[in-house]
Image 1 (tube, rainbow, N blue to C red):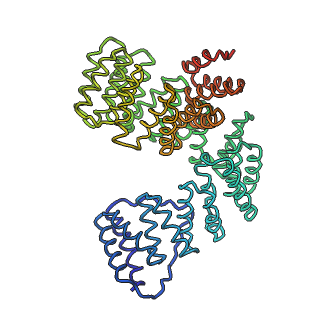
Image 2 (cartoon, one colour):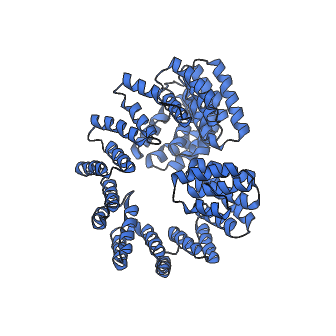
Length: 569
């Protein structure tokens, strides 16, 4: 009975998933491994048979939660590798992290030589922030000859403490002694060293890697980034050599072009032009070339590429939006409006709406601007809330604060639980020093959605910045950070709360991490202030100068420098 069921369950599961929803892309970091489970003959509990039949029919109906509940109950009860395998796959498909970890651990326990099981567990351990625990499973995959993806353990490396980083590096080094010629491990070591700011040692690891695998793409790119950051002449020489020997390696050329775009736009343009010459109808390449040329200041060439996108009928909204920006640059507001008004709902829609509003208000056409927003709300009711928020922001910026507040008040009378509008009104109230009303709106959001990280962060930051309610601020921002641990704005808030509490050392840690993730001038202003007050004036000036390099007109940087009488000359 159990042998028959072990055959039936995979068919049922795969059939049901295929019938109900598209199958998620495979996530294996190893080559597919075909294993045949040897299922022992033993009595099969009738209750389990019934439960698995319930699961099968639930899958066929698309009732995945019901199916998952049955599988999670039966996997530990039956302790059968096949059932554990299907439980793991179903949890992965449904993105249930805790359940996936539980199922994968049981699968590995029952089938330790199944490399798919170990790979699933390794991935889930990494996703759970337990990369060091994933390493032994990746090692087993390597020992079985399947090629483990060792850099996987560095996922979310920035969240680790210094002690955890050192321990992970030691574990990787020990494994590298077992596999001295493994290029995946060598690359992992190089990445680790780079993340720990030991770039010279990282380069030595990369040299060793290149002696074994001269064209390893990730290693080529990492070496280029390190050498460029060190200011070395011709930092991308090795990449260029590989491309010269393999001129049709468009995958590497594209990665190289994107890398160049972070530091040398003209060189990046050359690489994108080579790629586009081989694929003249590739609108992604056209779009990249348009943006690069606009960044360089060559609007005429950018317009040519954008109009080619229109001719091809691809990424039309993006093309129209940037043609509008170019017309604004050329002081042709009417032509810019034509392009912006051609942008439909999508990624650029609200940005185009913002530009339309600014052009009309700046030219004294407030009624026309308001009419445009009304028409858009009627035409695209799904965009109602963001359009109202955008219109209110525009009115407030233009000096029509009462009109902005009336717009939001009226909208919230109609939809009092619209959290985006509550947030817009809260921010408007904060700008005009009505902190009590601001807090009321933000707490209304949290009453509707206790895990709204944006509201938690905004309230916590404001309490820290404009009151002395530091304990409340810390609790709110900590909750936000637990929900979005890599969000620069929340990391900035945490740093600022700690600074206001007097914990300068930890404040600098959070602010530095925030600035690493986002070159935002307000974050730089905060970090510089913390460093200055800590007695590290030279470091503070370095942070501010670098920020002004990215945002030369930053009022935030200049305000803090003036307030602290720092002087950057």
